[in-house]
Length: 288
Ligand code: G3P
Ligand code: CA
Image (cartoon, rainbow, N blue to C red):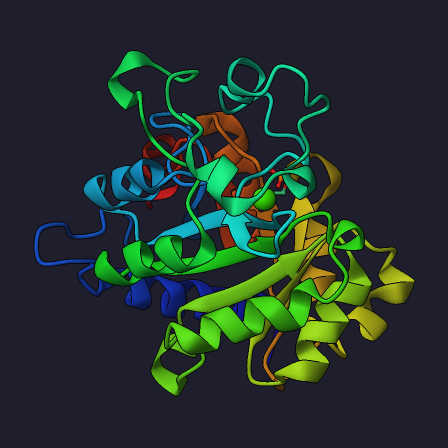
């Protein structure tokens, strides 16, 4: 099939997926443009990587969310973006002598005491850093779909297997749930490891590999998810011309696009999805 036809068919398919209701109360407003993924939850409107942020995406009608997973000192997986807890919690107040306040230096019980919402706004005071289990249960409750990023994997040996274990325990490796899951990372080794451990899981590599290297990435990654500032129409077409590890055309999600002009531009390139802090803005700009 011609590359443009493949891209169009992919977009139509993604649109069809988004026509499905996300929950009894909310229907997805984005039906015919690229897939819209709420980055760290709807993080322009609620504190990133909290349950409130995935609820906000749900309330706005967006079923796909992206979040980041890391590991505590005592081996629990938690949803947080930075290696340090300082930016998005009150950890410096509660534990003033524990600089640089790295996730890996705190137990899950210590992290559970942190306020991960007040930095964003008083409406969110008391929001917590969720464990991966808590987070998966909320995404399940909301009937949402997930791009889960394994963040800083070099800090957490074995996090790939551990993440898959939790996902399995929470029922997210069943055939029906696998259609709602992508695991991505900036680490090619981590993406390859996920593919080797659980070949049925859809994977994404975060970055913009050289075109010559794309066929190798396509052996273990279903998506190449690139900064929107690094891609072009021809790069997108090159990606779509390759088949990924599941025999389907390689996909590309562009991040992090938070304004209408850039959303329209990358949508015009034919990207399969856009990862954004402002899913409403991107949805409105890209619906045809
Ligand atoms: O999903 C893309 C994006 O999350 C990658 O960058 O730093 O926001 O995790 P970052
Ligand atoms: Ca991320």
